[in-house]
Length: 513
Image (cartoon, rainbow, N blue to C red; front, side, top):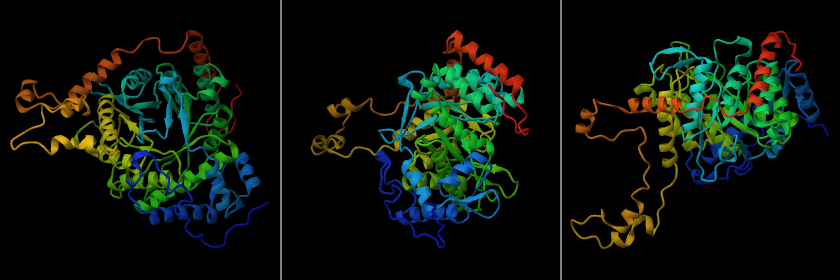
């Protein structure tokens, strides 16, 4: 039965209508918004999709939505998505996702049972800061090798993202970067297609690495990003990603990247709402072209610097917007969430970078994000630094510890000893102290020198320790990678075929492989 459009603004949904009463482990309750504010943003997102709608450029996706009850909007490509249609999609979308590695020990299941998060390396960076020389250069395949080696040994990093590489054909840079990375890590890899003809190649490379298409569906060792084109538009390529992900059983990261003052209103709430609406629309699209496919809500929030026009990811407004979007999508709509948790607007791993990423990470972690992205990224996600990645791993360990509520019980209080301690007494030799003396988080590359030790070390800092750790990790990687010789040959053949046959990005002709 065709659903008719609503002619009035729907009332805010009940508090539990979209999982507002659900918990995401021990982080439940650590929220910025009240229940009423969260319900208001949920309602406004649904109203925006139902009354204004979205622009769909992919004919097959548009046809699927037409059949499902979408309603023509203003303009030939715009569709309005009735509230009931969106609710059905949200209800049907899996509330948990498994991101597989090359072994079950590397698998990630989200949400985590402990309510914590996993981290991922930064993606899309064109630049690289060499850890040995501290010099900047264009990202290349040698840098991808180093990122893979480093990511293998960062405990908080659950999966890796391929960057943009230079020194290869530009139209197939994503294929080269993905093929190189997936061969050199045992961890899950995030796929980011750059143009429509490349999607099939990327999926087939993942299938080869997994041991076949059936193996990839059973254990998806890659997940794919699909993006909105803010405001409220979905390009042909990104809709095709959804279709291909459904065919190969590859989880989706539904990514919105609004910029406050540019492609979204110049306010924290307005920018967050744009991201929420676009992601909820992508959940609806995915439900109708790839039913049952896991979708991870991925708001990546920016604001425009009104003085320069630069996009900022670590301004207070962007940080607040990310936290709001994560909270609404996670606690409001019950989706697995992913956002930048590390990152800064400065081009170097400096004091500003540490301040900005610590604030961003804490805000997004407390909002309930399941994935904190951006490990190692600088300059608004355009540069990757291995030294910063090591520091981010340590920040992530601290954040994961900090968001766990401390135990408050008789044992934690050491109540018996507390009630009999003498004046001038201490707890150094208390059995409770001895039992728990190794419970505290180890400092890792963060240093705890006194002044004499600091001077004796020639004023060695955490940055120096992180550089040493990065270089040691890079030096210890196996040269051959983690795939068989047959797999490597098959992947190389796919890459060569892509270089020879991929159509022009704007030609509209897809290669047949």
